[in-house]
Amino acid sequence: MLDCWPKLWYHVHMKTLKFNYENAKLKGIWHFSLPSGFTCPGAFNCKTFADRVTGKIRDEQTPDADGIFYRCYAAMDEARRPNVRANRWHNFDLLQDAKSVADKVKLIADSIPEALKRVGGILRVHIGGDFFNYNYFKAWMKVATMFPRIRFYAYTKSVKLLAQFINEYNGLPSNFVFTCSRGGKYDNLIPATNVKSAKVFFNQAEIDALGLDTDHTDELAIFGTGDFALLIHGSQPAGSTASKALTANKKKGFRGYADTHAPISKSLD
Figure 1 (tube, rainbow, N blue to C red):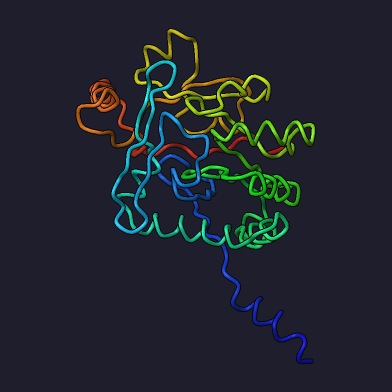
Figure 2 (figure 1 turned 90 degrees about the vertical axis):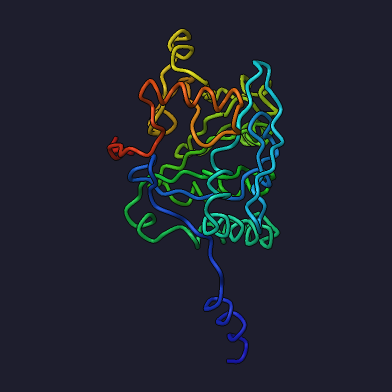
């Protein structure tokens, strides 16, 4: 009888990861995040940190091949909102404590909201943060196979880990959709993955000239099959090229993602 006490205590007091539902951009979508920058080994032109305690921004962006760099939108959200910062560090701390792939799988699977498990839906893995090591990446792939009614999706600059998994397992779970985020350290590996990619642009005219579609609702990230564009948004350093582009876009009517968008409603079959 006494042998059951440690297991019972663990079950009662076990901490779980924090998931959220919807935001100004993602209607009808669950999402999960980690601290930006600190968990982004592939970050390059967007590498930004918000101090865990103070929220003070630290810029470490490097211009990509096209000279583009900008502050990470998710890091700025952490800087402004202590509760967001706390939730993301809570998640990272728990995942670091879960040492093995199996431990991480159990932690993630046990933490997924019951409503999402029961009826299915869409889950974005990382608004803030990225796949910070290979064991963590593999854990999410295993979790996806456990919940086939959930459509998982992620943007990632951790293309090295993505390519490693595809090579090792000859593909990805059918219900986990990736978009490679260009402007990272491993852009050269993107073609070999056969995974679609997205790039941030400073103006719509440049996007139109390239014949790309612009994703404002994550619909192309979730359901699309080809490369697409994202338009710069969020707070940028005063006087920077990115900040000037934001001002110009606002004059043309783009207000970011504060306006309400219709929920994503395509079939998940």
